[in-house]
Length: 304
Image (cartoon, rainbow, N blue to C red; front, side, top):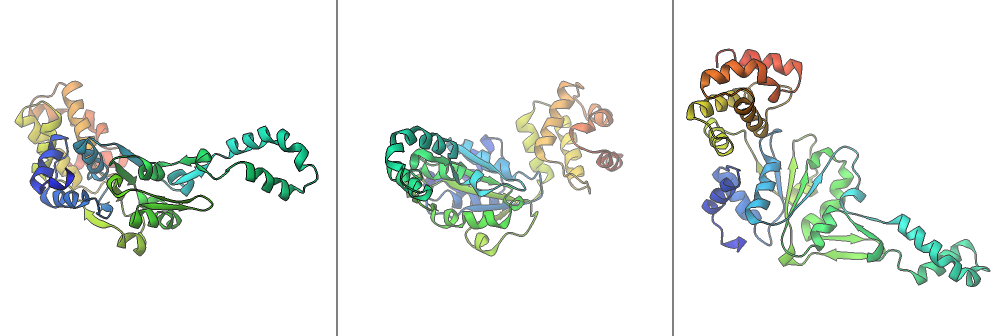
């Protein structure tokens, strides 16, 4: 069914789920829906809608979303797999007494080998499935979002290469977990270009760069998320557009813009353009997140 979509279908269905793509984005998603498609690496400034796009695709297709939120210091055992070492120790303790007689004349290493012969310590009973393994073993299609991959160490990229190219993970002492083609996840990776990604990773991905929304696109998004007059929507969209073009330390995201629009309606009772401009000094905290940006934003909005 996914292969029967057109770019127009993608635009329409994503819009119905609150994401308004341009034609470039629609074609990138159309290509990524193929069962044999490469993962899609999405780059762009913070707040342009990279993560929201993956969420919208999951909602559009009504399939699960499995998300890895990357951060500095995250390790492969939090992304791929790990072993339940505590459970292994409990099992060793439980069977030790039963084997005690047969082990009494053996060295420590010999005893460990003897216990291992009675229990499959590196089998499925002790394997902890982290998000990537979960995505490979879950039946049916799903979206796997590896968010902000650029915040990880290069070693994480290396650990992901087999999955990105073959939809498989090889685990020492366990074997290879291979995802069936019909169950392959739709894989998105996002990056804010915090660091340059490796060439092996880039070769395994298709690429999409998302620009900031145009003024007209912002208006559509605001209209879809709040019930307000055209005058209100136009003014709110103009403010968001102006601030996205302003050199702020923390870029304004569309989701923050929607939150601000709701704040204006529900907290300040704004209905007109004048209401919005009058409320800006008191509501700007919904958009900017530090004092320096607040001063910069207020200067940029003086003649809005």
